[in-house]
Length: 168
Image 1 (cartoon, helix red, strand yellow):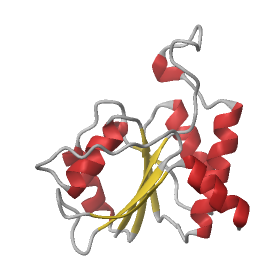
Image 2 (cartoon, one colour):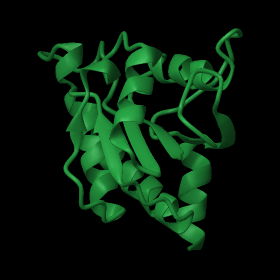
Image 3 (cartoon, one colour):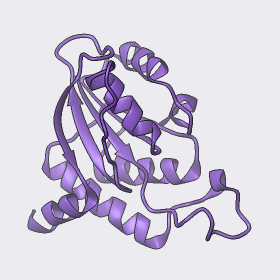
Image 4 (cartoon, helix red, strand yellow):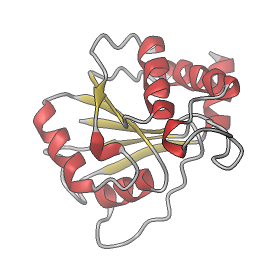
């Protein structure tokens, strides 16, 4: 199985988005544009998720919608409470095991995504993984997804992905 972990696109700074609770922030125009460019790069890399899970927060859901559209993912997005801020790795692992898919994408938030990736790669240590907004990593599993059973295939930040999209 391949798992693509994606941080939502730019939604502005929480302190600067007036009149909205943090949980209600939506992608900015730049966030939408960057996410579309990242999706084009992922398509170039052969990313074709059979299943996409997203945090129910608007900025993550909007990111997932753009990714699904550009990647021609025909499956309906799955709103996953365990990808909301404060998520835990055990719920993600259960979701991955229940899905029976070879290629899966999740869209969520920092610092939770870093903790999830760390748990899948090296649960007894705390890896310092950075996902910039619209950053993506790919973790593979030879067998059943489990804590510590993942192998990091790559981690690309949006600048790298946008460069790849421009070359393709």
